[in-house]
Length: 453
Image (tube, rainbow, N blue to C red; front, side):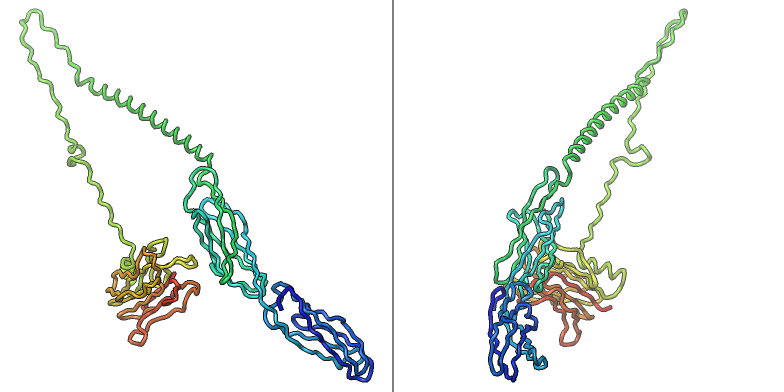
């Protein structure tokens, strides 16, 4: 029967004793609260038969467990209680699904992000399995949902955390309302959409923008006055320095009785300009510009070379090209590369090793691409890039082996999370490490690699 409806069966009872007796009926079992007996007692003469009606009315709630449910009715004679009997039956309740979702809070505010929570209640009588995604009409927000998939028992609730990030910042101006939607999806049913509002505030308040404008204006006026006053002082100093150079002394008066004789004229002393290079005892010309420092590339080979120099031995360094992020920083010896619970596939992998003569690897690419034609091989402390960065093609499986040494690894796969750690057996039947899946359209989102020392 369906929850929320009613069904009934008849229970027939015969008095096989030799005295008049009264019988009382008590439902027992898990479904006893949903069973009523009418009439609750009957009185029978010896050799006579009576009938009571059992009515089942399970509510449409999670308490009405789906599937077969055993029930029984305890029949207690008044005259002979030791002769109590308990006939049993089976009630099968059909499953039903009902869920509700609500944003807490409905409106979130922030400058850089908003963090609402989605409460999902399972009001059905079966386990609910669903996924949560986000979208908005104007493509103005990016979404991060954790966890992206939930499994809720009947009568239980689960909370899903969401992070909303605006794609563009508002530096000045009024706050803006950006509607968004979180959808709860179940297989074979219409998604349940829950709408909310994200209020994006400006990075700087209006009063602060006005204050900054005023301060900048005052600073410009101060600088203008400073340079004007400095120019006048420089002009006066130059005039005082040039005055002794152009001034001439008066000639002494000739004696009255003496015959005037020509006064020798002394040519003016011309000061030759001092070469710029003569000051300070150095050569002329502008100082040479320092050469820019060479930028060290952030690759797996650079990382493993530096690590082997500091700690000689076997090491493996690697980095992942993640969709919408690009190349990540290189990590080494068991650290995690990629992302978890962000639905971002890996498109390419850069790896390098030390302590092994060479390494070989290949990747299985989704979207009907499959395995590339040949494996890639690289000597130690050399970058080996596999996959197609920036192509949008997701990596589903990484296979890697060493010429010598033991390699171990683990992979984080979409929907199944971390796999079990595995190691190769050099010289044995399995001389490689395989992370991820093949042909299942499940993206590899993160991975870890280690080598024996």
